Length: 113
Length: 112
Image (cartoon, rainbow over all chains, first blue to last red; front, side, top):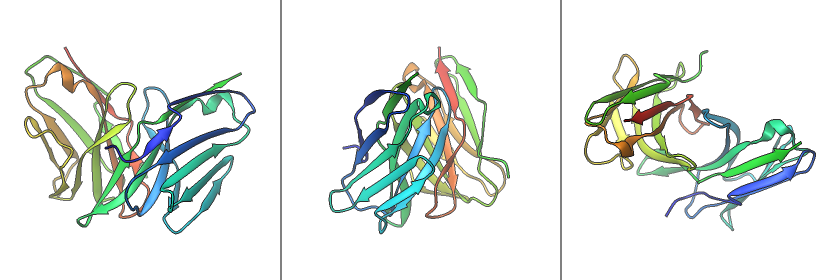
């Protein structure tokens, strides 16, 4: 089955609120990455958290990683209308010496003004 | 340092024609990945290449699809005898090993 399952599939909140998205995976990983995709555009890398890290911050973004539960969360604080996008987690694994990024289905985030 | 460049951005092909999608990785990146994204879905891994080598093509359909990353020039994803189901956005990403991947803007293929 697909590695990197995000939930919820869709999230709609008011501007200024915090948004939390979750990602679960099934196998061991090298690192986990979060990406944003605006409608019809390419993916923008947001943050990378390594398997030996538990939390990482970047501006209004906070990512946690729990390898025992094989899960990660992305928190966006004080959301803005410009944060409206789809957010994907991707697990980075090494399989037979080859690195592979495997994406989930994404969470579609809508920030209402 | 330009980002990952994909062209064309939009490609329309009739059923049965060939589609060639090009990807120039970021300078210094020797790892290239191709992904396909259907509408309202996530990205599905297709193939991972290093210069002149296909490392992992487990996500590539067995027929009609091929990819290459020559010593000189861009990586090419080639789809022969396209069908309507090939309509999707195709994204290329490049990275140095064990680092974040940088994505291009994608090529949106429409088969009519």
